[in-house]
Structure formats: C-alpha cells, structure tokens
Length: 140
Image (cartoon, rainbow, N blue to C red):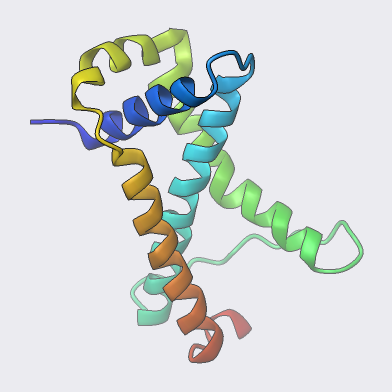
C-alpha cells in the first residue's frame, strides 16, 4: 500500500525540481508551501469541529501589532503553519530523507501534490464562504 503522505511529498519535490532546476533554496520553499497546504486543512478541520460543537479549541490571540490583520496573520502562522513545518521537516527533510522518498516514489508521480492542493484549496474556500455568511463561530 502506498503512503499518500510520502507520495504527496515525492510528487511535490520532483515537480518543483523539474520546473526550478537551478534554485538554491528549493527545500525551504517546498517545505513552506507543503506545510501551508496542510495548515489550511488543519484550520478547516478545526473550523468544522468548532461549528458542530464537537471540539472547541481556543485560538491563539496575539496583540503585538497595531491593528488586527498582522496579529491574526502571525497567530495563524504560529498556531497552524509552524507545527506542520516542524513535523514535515522531521519526516521529510531531516538528514536528507527526501532523497529516499523520491527514489521510492519516483515511478508513482502523477500530479498528486497538485490535485491534493487544489482539493484542499476548494474545501478551504467553501469553508471560508460558509463561515463568513452563515456561522457565528468566529464571533465568540
């Protein structure tokens, strides 16, 4: 059975390297983009759990900057993106594990990362639209 997590990363690394062969900081960019996609899924799951009342997670509130946009942005980065960066770095990029993963799954590459990312973006967009118009979840 295929491990879809590693399949996602192998596909993302292979495709990124195919279109940007000479880029020096490609590992950081792929790590951040993949972790950002996973963070959108994490936020979407938290939003639906909060809406249904199954699990109420108090969201982090930072009040350092004037205005709420920068505070909300850094709260999101700390609460959702950073844990995924740490996890993905440990599983994929620590001690160049990505080389083994790419070698193992290079024959299975069929735009899994792109398809997964688009599905997550669509689900995230639908959740944003629904929560903006119909839910009072974020007003509490």
